[in-house]
Amino acid sequence: MNSVYATAFQLLKTNDPESIAKGFAMLRSEVESRPSDMKALFEYAGAFDFMGKEADALPHYEKILQRGYEKLPLDDQPRLFVQLGSTLRNLNQFSRSREILEQGLKYFPQYSALMAFLALTEYSLGNHAQSTQLLFEVLLENPTDSSITDYSRALRWYSKNI
Image (tube, rainbow, N blue to C red):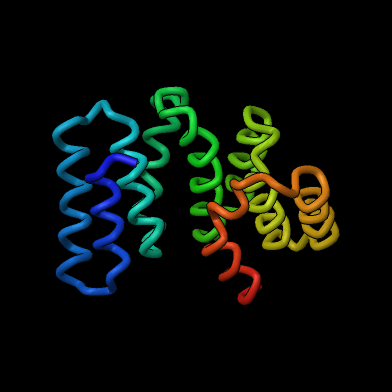
């Protein structure tokens, strides 16, 4: 990860309002200085998401999708679909969340986090059996996929608040 991004996220994790403001300012500066850099936009959206400001993250994620997810570094491409799908779910846009996560699964079928977040969306839609089936598929199909651990903070929170 770019040192600017790493530094900004360290500041966001402090819970200190001044540090958080500084972290957001660093990321905003990256976006403003390189408006066509999808990575900068993705990290900025992710910062809002990380801080529980999904409504602020949404337009940035949508902009990336509109411009072409392929313009992101390869490692970030499936993450866009996870994070956008999760953001939409948290904003109670369940049908759109399902659409985005299913689209991500078409492009990245081995990225287990997509299926885990789709399971959460299905749960939110009241499809509990489908949700459970998807979670078992995640566990059985690709149990060593690191994408699950990449989102362990969010998944642990959901596991306690479902």
